[in-house]
Image 1 (tube, rainbow, N blue to C red):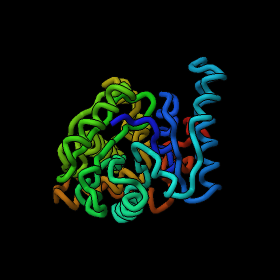
Image 2 (image 1 turned 180 degrees about the vertical axis):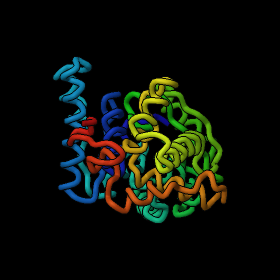
Image 3 (image 1 turned 90 degrees about the vertical axis):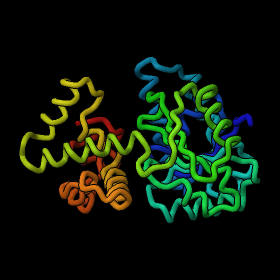
Image 4 (image 1 turned 30 degrees about the horizontal axis):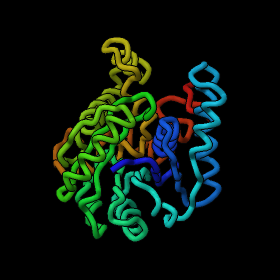
Length: 290
């Protein structure tokens, strides 16, 4: 299989990052959202991201124009039937993802690989909503997509060897990212480990041991993290971290995965991190920390 035309379902933060990264690699991208308003917003955020790189001399004006020209805005799933690969990037809601895959199964011929960017959910259960679960695989990109050269490749119970090998080859040869093989388990590898760290940092904050700033500085400076655990939580989305922890707590039954109360309170208050401008820290409209 040679993946040249890629569908991206969902224009949120991860969808934007994946679409931009794919287009910058010379691939044609069909970006799908529910309506034109959401599509225009997602496309505008991709353009903003490219403008930031332009300002820092990371790309040229011609490269920006070429990248944007490779991204087509789509509101109907039927157009995805011409793709070689479709990547779903909607929120971490199992039933919503299953509904998307059921729709994709109807419009995409059986040779098209269907991937989910889920960070914690069961690929076997997602695949069960299709007539061809052997073509369903997990491709978990890590934020920020462009600069993190790792993709977790998750095999569901029925994912075929052909689907896995083609996807791994695409990730490593075309995208030039390291593909880590993961056999299905709640949270996989990276989400399971990082969410446990974030949850412990939240408990430390709740207990009044240190401020959010000092907790992050302790890990960022002391252990050379690019970002501290609380800023990571903001950038992943507090709602996404809560969903991942809830899922792992439900599946494993281990108290270490039980979400900290402060996380639940923040999500109920609508403070979801960079996507709302406020989480444990505050951010401007471009997602830069204030």
